[in-house]
Amino acid sequence: KLQFFGNDPQNTSIENGKKIVLNCRVQTHNPTMKIEWLKRIDGQQSFRPDALVFGSEQYEHIEQPHELQSQQYSNEILSKPLIFSSVSLKEAGQYICLIQNDKAV
Image 1 (spheres, helix red, strand yellow):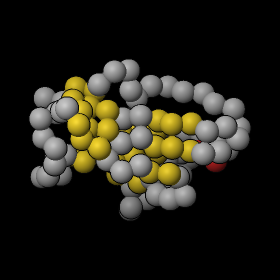
Image 2 (cartoon, one colour):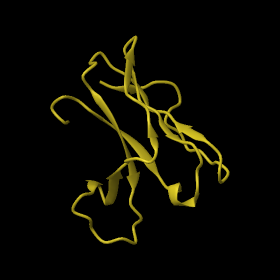
Image 3 (cartoon, helix red, strand yellow):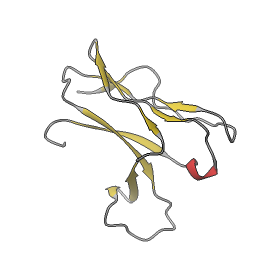
Image 4 (cartoon, helix red, strand yellow):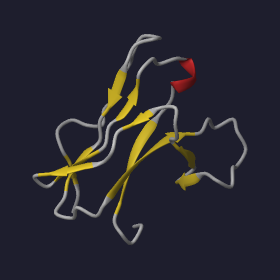
């Protein structure tokens, strides 16, 4: 069973142009698990074949130019922050971290 470590992730508001770090940390005994960051696709958009679907929501993979730090595993804590060095309105939205094991479950 996975447990999020600390209070991450959590809702965050930030001023335009500022740096923000979204953390995702989970406690696990499995160092081969992967953390992936996703952003919810606006509900106004039609279905996208490249989207991941959870319930009625669609999510897209987070790619560059955002700074994705490499995943780290230490003392049974798996972590991978998502960093925006200068946030703008286009980054506004809902982000989730997806944790996958080596079987993609």
